[in-house]
Every structure is written in structure tokens, then in C-alpha cells.
Length: 308
Ligand code: PMP
Figure (cartoon, protein in one colour):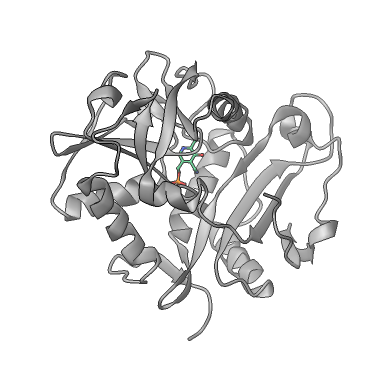
């Protein structure tokens, strides 16, 4: 599905026309994958348009860049304001927000230091990432033949553009084999995450999720679901999870800004539970959508975009 153009994109402090938001072909990012980005959603809640956990996402962007010994030439507050400005300039009610920091055009060669650190923020309309039925019926997934990076290779805690070359291998393999998504194992063969989602399993009423050391991105939705689950009285175990647990789990689901809370109904053609979204998954979906759709926000996770 082609992205639907809007009017302007924020680039290095200015709003430029969508068609003029271009970079040079010799930009460092194109050759060496030197970018860090975020995916954030602005929801049209029952109480108005609001960005979900803007501060956490922007903070993770700064962390991603910091891991690579790089500095963003703006403050977190300035980029949060820029995201709001871009949404307002395009009069969006609900959208996906993509801030991206990248090494631009300057020197050539692997050493990035001679290239500027550029920043852009784009917004566009976006629906359910894995399809609307995915949220209600669940999706079919496989275990990828690709593993997530070994410790001390590519830092999984950084949301860096280059990491998504691996996600693409996972996604292509899965989609071409007829699955919606793949789950990757870490270097030891334990569960890690999807190509763009964190993973949760429910077994005997306890919710399990792999730890950061299993080579995964610290998801903002993951953090949110852990908190909501705890508040609802569920027991959550963050632990190293062997692959075979997917074949005996009662319920499984993915979390992510794009995927929201997506039930998994089968893995490697084996049904998860009875092949339908289970009660814990549904309860957590409901708690999540109560915030982002109904606008019920006791935690102050929503950042409203327009004056009421
Ligand atoms: N893992 C990966 C590899 C991702 O790309 C994403 C999407 N940002 C996630 C997990 C989920 O993170 P979040 O909930 O912050 O969107």
C-alpha cells in the first residue's frame, strides 16, 4: 500500500513540501545504514487527537543515537514540539509519526564523523499494520530461520535503520511462506521477538516475555502492556524462554506501535490454545484500546495535539 502524501515534512527545523523532502545519494545513511528512528502513533481518541507516549518514544530515539556515540543537534523537547507542529501543519487527526535521525551528505567512507547529523519528522495516515482481522482473529506466524544478533554485535536496544535489514530477511521469508510474521530466536536459540514486534506468551495464567538480553528492542507497547497487566493483577515473568514454549502456550500475542496488541493464533502451523485469541490477550487488548481509542488515560500517556 502506497503511503498517502501529506503537505509537509519537518527537516532540520523547517517544514518542507512533501515532494521536496529529499537527500543526496551520497548521504552516509544510504551506504552504511546510519540512521535511528521511531514509530509513534497519534490516535483520534474519543477525547481528541493524541500522541501515545511521545516522551518515551523520543527518549528512546536519543538512547538509540547515544549508543552510537552520536549527538542529535536538538533537544528532546524540541523534537517533541516538532512532531506536534508537523501533525498540526498537516491537520492530521490520526497518523503514524516517523522521526528519523541520519548521517547525511559530507564525507564518504565508513567513518561517520565527517557527515552531518540530520533530522526529519514525517507523518502519514496508517491503519492496522497486520490488517484489521489480525486484531480480532489473530495471525499465523513461523519461527524464523534467521536469528537475532548475538550480544556485542549489532545493539538490539538501539532502533537503528541497519537493524531492519535483518527484520526484512525475517519478513520476506515469512510472507513468502504464507505467514503474516516471524518470531526470531536469539543466538542461544531462545525466543526473542518479531520483525517489528515484541512477544508475549501466556501459560497457566502467567504472562511471560523475553528479557532485553534476548536481543530485543525495548518496546514502548511492551512496557505499557507489562504495566497494564500488573495493574489488572496478572503475574508477569520476564525471563529467558525456550523455543518449545510456543508449542504449549495457551495464548500468544505481539505488541508494537504498528501491531498494537495482535493475537497469534498459530506458530509453524500448530494452533496456539484453541486457535482463537484467549481471555488474557483480549483483556489486555481491551485495556490498551480503552486508552488509545476511548481516551481514558489515568497514567497521562496521551499528549493531546489540539486545543479543545
Ligand atoms: N521490536 C522491534 C524490532 C520493533 O521494530 C518494534 C517497533 N518499534 C518493536 C519491537 C515494538 O516497539 P514499540 O512498542 O515501541 O513500537
